[in-house]
Structures are given as structure tokens and as C-alpha cells.
Amino acid sequence: MIILGIESSCDETAVGIVQDGRVLLSNVVASSMELHAKYGGVIPEIAARSHIEAIIPTLQQSLQDAGLGWDDIDGIAVTQGAGLGGSLLVGVMAARTLAITKQKPLYPINHVEAHLYVNFITESRIAAIKPRHAQPGFPILGIIVSGGHSQLVLFKNHFDYTLLGQTQDDAIGEAFDKVAKIIGMPYPGGINVSRLAEQGDARKYKLPKAKMTGKYDFSFSGIKTAVLRLGQELVGKDHSLPSFELPGLLNDTQKANIAASFQRTACEIIADKALLAYEEFSPRSIIIGGGVAANGELRKQLAERLPIPIEYPSLKLCGDNGAMVATLGCYKAMLGATPADPYTLESAPNLSM
Image (cartoon, rainbow, N blue to C red):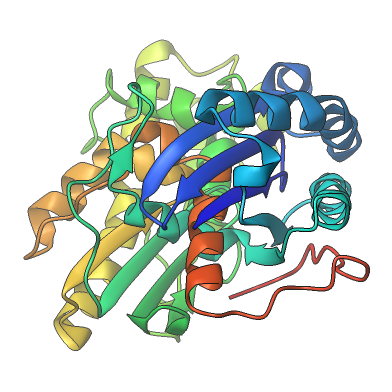
């Protein structure tokens, strides 16, 4: 079973090809990040236009890298949601057109769920991507950490899962990006905050953790505001100081200490809830997906606190990619999911698990 997956939920146009839900044959990602950098974040209209330009070359390159033709492809999977409306539309329309013209079954994919399914890849034909040694075993505790999502999910089996909790405001990746702006780091903010944190004292400042009604829910809005107030206090100003003026008043040491203290606390919030869930449900495996899964501090904390080891996906598979979409598509096809009607499938920007 060979499935081609198309991902276009944000600013990456990505196409991956996976065999039998475990063998990665190709994974091509075309990013428009540089176009968004001068704006300090993703501009939806620019992202959508970039997808239009990149989708056909990315498809062609993925097939070429895998050494396959359309006759070898058993089905097409595409991110239906969640994501930016214009970006999703490009991928969905491309997939619908291909499904019709190439006469292939079409499988709509939940972007958030796909981030976890990349953990089922155990063999890679791509030298730069080192896969896991073994597939996770059910029941599985899934930790999703990205720019738009922070969730804990318990899987009893494929497609049989319970959403234990999720963020009630900002996602952890979003909080990283907002803190980056507060201390004057360039886009993409998350990775630059992490790099700066390596130079700082992670215990220098104590930042708050929100107390949630839902046992496994998250909140990162408060810690982001606490960082702003901390910065204003450090430069001798009150809350009336505009946030855009703060970076010019903080010195390099203060910025590094803020970055390190924020990163430690934000990762502790995830690790705290993951440990609670492990203690209650005793999963056989723990998997993690999403862009923040590449964060070294988060990996360190989870390794130190969870009783069982986590085998992480390759760093190249933590961000948005087509391989994760193709992998989930493989399991839909292999387990008998009903394909979508390529004449009527619509994108769903607000799709949730």
C-alpha cells in the first residue's frame, strides 16, 4: 500500500510518499518562511499564493525522489484541516483533481492527528531522515505540541482515541513566538528563543503556571503576559510601556535569562500534564508530534520525568510535512476507511480531533 500525502495547512507546501504505514519513500517540503520573515509571522494571503506556485513542482519532486509513477500510487491523502483557509484550499483542490484524473481513492486527514502518526515510520529511504526503531504499541499517550496546538490524547487503537485535554488559549508554539517578539527575537520566533535560552539561566526568574479546571488542559496566555510584565519591571517601567519598545531597553543577559526561564517553565507545563496522564492511564507507549517536539529542553524534561522512554521522530519530521499525512492515509486505506468523494470534499480550517 503506497500513499501520497499532501500537506498545505500553513506556510509549507509538502508532499510525502509512504509505504504500508511505516516505510518513508520520499518527503519534499517547500517553505515560504523567508517571505513571511519581514512581517514577523505568517501572512495567509502570501502563504496561499506560495502554495499555488509550489504544489506541482513539489508533487513532481516527491514522485521522482521515490522513483515512482502514478501507476504505483494506491491512494492520495490530503490535509483537510485544521489550518489557514486559503492554504488548505490549495492542497485540497490539488488532491481532488489528482484523485479524479488519476482515478485514486482520496483520504481526508486531520493535521493534528497526522503529527502523531509520523511516529509509525520505522524505515526510511532518505539518508538524512533517521526513523524510529520500532512502532509504538497501544495504548498510546500522544503529546501534540505545535504552533497551533497543545493536546494530550489517549489512543486505545487506530482511530479509537480520547482527547484528554488541550490548550484553552495559546498553544505552546504560539507562546514561544509571542515571547520572541517581546524580547526582540526575529521570526521564526520559537527556534530563536530556544537558541538564546542556551546562553541564559533557566532558574533566574520564576514564572507562573496556570491552574486549570480541566485536569489535562493547558494555558500559555498567562505565562506570555508574565514575561511581558517581567521585562517591563526589569527596565524600571510599568505596564504602560508598549511591548514593541521593550527589546531596545533589555540587555542581552536579561533577554537570555528571560528566554531560558520561559522555556523551562513552558516545557514543565507540558511535562507536568504528561506525567499525570501516564500515572492515571499507564500507556504502553508515549509519542510526541508537532514542531515543538524538536525542542531540546522539552525532550530533556520528558526523559527525566516519565518512567518509560520516548523514541522521538526525526527532527525533519517534527514540523509540517507530507510524510505524516501519507502515513495516516496508509492506515486509513489499510484499515478500510471509506474514501472521500473527490467531487465534494471541502477543506475544514477549524477541524478538531
